[in-house]
Image 1 (cartoon, rainbow, N blue to C red):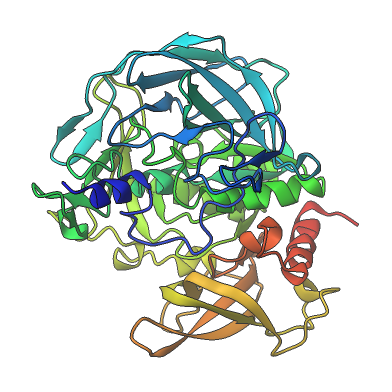
Image 2: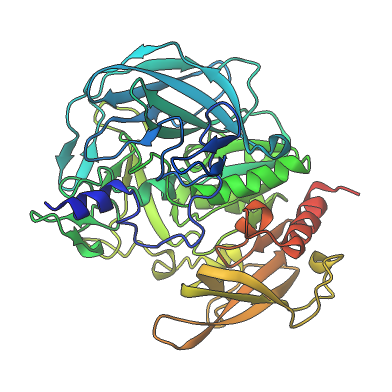
Length: 484
């Protein structure tokens, strides 16, 4: 295998079915101060490209050499519960785990919460693979983190660093069952669907890709049907699209919204009660939904809890979750897509189109970012934004787009409005359009769907923020939270 191919695999950016036009966003290097000097003497801010090394000599681990890689079980825990880290280190040496919480923190974007003792790293066995399902469930536990009672709920990142300066990451969530205004649901099921670990040209597989015997990347028809949560994320250890959730978190915590946190699997398993919240927020790309997730969201809406979807292509594929070989619940994710026996896994092809919950549904990919065109600017969502009908907000239609499908039934509603209608060119040069939707259910719940990948990055992504989107989002959340 050529060195060029190895470098591409090591980049962690080769094998995703849908590229994220925004990248992973401002993810901190998390090393001491907030600015660093790179090898050319230039100052590098905390949101530096993860693919480069800092002046301190830290390098990103990769899936070929596995300098340091790991995963956690479970992915979310409450204070008083434990999270187990399973980590491989090659060559064997000491390593440490710095734990950070994502938030605004005066613009820093994250705060260090704790550091592990120096830990002894070992080379764990190679991943097991059967019928494209790759699992590391046989790895020994390396460290147990007992979540203290005083930790704040939130999105956390464990930063793994070896003695010789290689680094990788593991995301996890701290949740609790106390009531709050808004419950933020991190899309860990969709994150795992895109995970090609290991990106080594041999073993890795996601619901989109796998490798052939010559190290060539295969398409969806040859991808995995079942994938495991018992494995690291490819590349630097952070999921594709993770930055969209972090964009929303930084912005929402900056303005003091009362947030609780959970993962999609918590919603699936019934570990959270949506009726305890005024609204559920789905902050990033959230494409893969189980039947229990959908039922929970529908019950929440019908009981008066609002739903906020800040991306596109939401709830497109129906999935199932099953226990691991060792019996731990919800560690295997299955989506047959259009392969194998049984019905298609598309919600819209099993007579439950996503529009019946969202108000709009997936229309297609957006090859080049274009403007979001404001519609119905007199609506309260656009209050104090300065937006007028026909105004174009640059770059806000990107990645993927949703729209209203007239031949698909709508959810029951008291009122409904489309707040953007934006033309864009698809990959074949045809003109299509994106729409942003809001409706009020008979229960009084509001259901908002942005219909684009670019909404969350517009809240707090360097180079992508837009004051009109920030104000519109605040108008929506303030109404849901009953703020003055």
